[in-house]
Image (tube, rainbow, N blue to C red; front, side, top):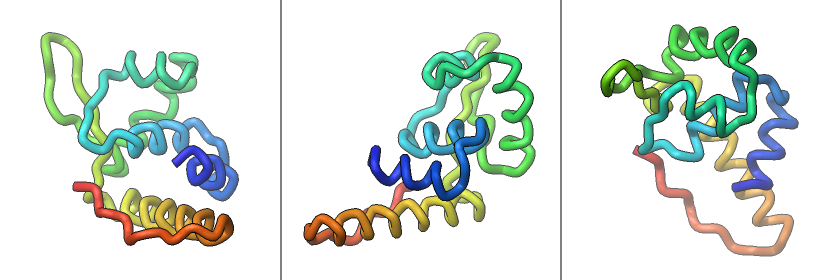
Length: 111
């Protein structure tokens, strides 16, 4: 999905919020600590904390569970906003495949 991700960032903008959302969408069955997300994205803590709470407040990211003092956060695939982004990712992926002359099977919906 690297090409789709690149096009998605071009379409939506390379904002910190989109970088977080796209990263979490790459791993829809996993949950992460805030520290893991920050390190994986190479994002400053200040930037991350400035935007992350909004993603939780909008329901795009949820608090899944807590281990010791760390909260774990997965993407909320049931969020209407995330569903819309996912639909666009699928559309972009189909367009990339068509442009390369490949047949593409319908994507399997992430649960």
